[in-house]
Amino acid sequence: MASVVFFGAAASADTAHAASERSASAGAFVPLPPDAVKRLKSSDAVQVKSALDDVRVSGKAGVAAVPAIVERLRAGLTPALTLAAIETLGDTESETATDILAWYSHHRNVEIRRTAIQSLARTKGTQAVTALRNALSDPDPAVRGLSATALGDMRAKDAVPALFAALEHNVPEAAAAIGELCSDTDCERLAAKIGHMPFDVVTSGLDEVLLRPPVDVKDEIKVKIVGRVREMGTAEANRFLKGVQTRWPTRASARVKQAIDQAVIATASSPGADEATRAQ
Image 1 (cartoon, one colour):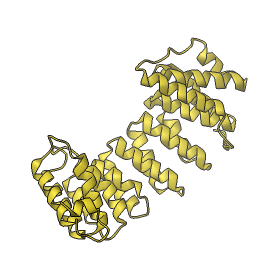
Image 2: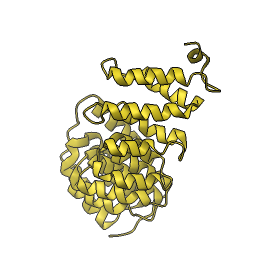
Image 3: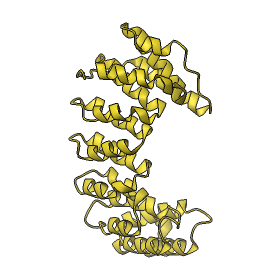
Image 4: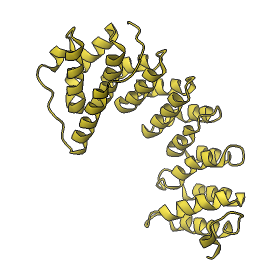
């Protein structure tokens, strides 16, 4: 496979991406032009770029073009076309693109690695999870953060141990991902990091935990977590608890809601807490 270096994305790629988003938001996909695959195989960069744009606009309907795009990436493209091709594979959301995207997630150029990670988050699959888990140790903070977020979004529960390791190695985005995925035991483990890690980092994960349904995390665990935050007795704790209180679903657990309400009141007198809360 030829090596490429990214020097900058073409402005037209942004235009195609915007068009793709508009198409998806409208709930319909634009059919792939019949000559798109032929243009992808062209030696003319303009033809290749126009074909990639058409595939992006087609979204999932452009899956028939995936093998041709993969073939071009394996053969090597110009820097700008390489980036456009990787982005396009993400737009197709085809798991068959995962292998080549996983390869590019190790590319020497950081922009290409970042883009490959973002596309892997959309193509999904077991191989994507493996690549994302490996990328948690990438030297670039953005790659690590994007990988952690993607694992959470993909509900990759097997990645929780790797996410804890990443959290302990300065990947703050891992906390929210853990909060989306953790079992009762792991959720408690995350809460135990209060006081040992930045409060806003830990609570980005606890926020996810508290708002998950009871079938995912028991009310008993949520009450314990609220208690841990309450014990902090700080303005930060009060603001966090108030935020959860404000967003608490109407039909969610009354038991947990009561614990949150009591914790908000108990931390209201903390230095720096909101005056409105103190008046309650």
